[in-house]
Amino acid sequence: MKYIEEFNNPELARRLLDDIHATVTRPWALMEVCGGQTHSIIRHGIDQLLPEGVELIHGPGCPVCVTPLEMIDKALEIASRPGVVFCSFGDMLRVPGTDRDLFRVKGEGGDVRVVYSPLDALAIARRHPDREVVFFGVGFETTAPANAMAVHEARRLGVRNFSLLVSHVRVPPAIEAIMCSPDCRVQAFLAAGHVCSVMGTAEYPALAERYRVPIVVTGFEPLDILEGIRRTVRQLERGEHRVENAYPRAVQEGGNPAALRMLEEVFTVGDRAWRGIGVIPRSGWRLSDAYRDHDAEHRFSVSGITTRESGLCRSGEVLQGLIKPHECAAFGRECTPRTPLGATMVSSEGACAAYHLYRRLGTGTPAAVRATGEATPVG
Ligand code: SF4
Image (tube, rainbow, N blue to C red; front, side, top):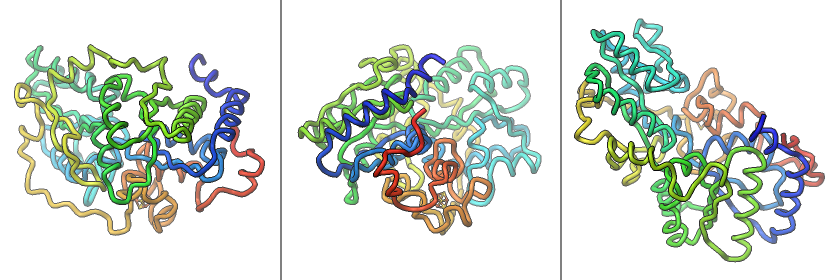
């Protein structure tokens, strides 16, 4: 399949790895921002093929994982109400709230539906004008334009029974928060290519300059990631800190102008809480005042929610790259994909789910892997 198989080529991967090994002279800690990149790295064993001391720290770029518990509980409360059709992408249904999840609400009689687009939810609202249809708008800059478009369409068509429960987050403020943390070990970032395909790269040079970190926009296939790492370690070894685009087939400097216009029309930037991390200034979007009638939080007046996190779950530390998933005592014991205690074990982009799926059950990298470079083959 074009753009998939050609970016899995083992021979090209070997050449990139050779270049990385030839470049690196000392330890470096790089953070891949996106959970999709984390899954690709763990799936293909890329971290195990790198030179000794080059560490990939898994970042907070899993939208399901960082949706705050209070927002999950609000979703559960709204979905439980009579007359509501609550629509969501499938990966939110098993994310644990304080005492249940959306599957439980569905099992108890709530009308919870999995859709593949926010426009599907809008279509349900048009077919059922007697019902309140709510779409759970979760995600980074990648999913926000489509959700903005759904609300825009609802207003244009006069569909008054459609609303959005908004939990959108933005990557650049999260990078800033990571760099400001006293525990930060990150020396460079592999920025999320799909986010930059929407937003462009304009927000990154100031971050690279202020924190003196290389930021390399990186894709998701094995060769994309190796190329991102290659460029990153080359900058680190030279003492540089620039923004580079290693994903030019998808990312333009100016992003996607139509998507940016839609975001600006519908959303307003504001502070937002990230699950396990806390409030990050200007890190989220909410509906602008012009679209307030379509804001589910406003429409359903959900308040008085008291949240309670699992005492065992350390997903906040996982999301900040402070521990690896298998360093959590509950990993693979109390917490599995079937019995998740935290969102990072549920989401298809969660680091805990990746470690469980690809059987990264212990710490360390097998010595034999480093000696021979014969980890899981790329591709
Ligand atoms: S393994 Fe489970 S309990 Fe531990 S941090 Fe991950 S999600 Fe939380």
